[in-house]
Image 1 (tube, rainbow, N blue to C red):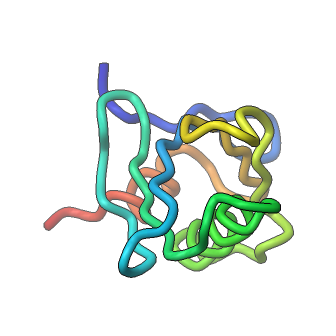
Image 2 (cartoon, rainbow, N blue to C red):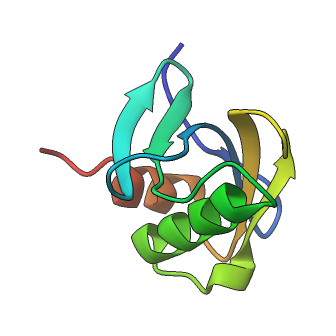
Length: 98
């Protein structure tokens, strides 16, 4: 299975594998059906989740408030919902042709 955001009404949902405490924030690419995202923030008091939302918002060109962790708050595997973007646009912005 490969990474593919799913249209969800007014936005998309997709699985994310978060690696907190990384040297820098970056979208590392697809990891099976999930998007792998490295964040410098530590995995404590929601800091890594907040930074994940910020990194995805910048990549998707949406406000940070449009990105929300909807499942897996305390786990490295999460489900993220993003309002204001469709699946094709999200895929193109998150995994641009290299």
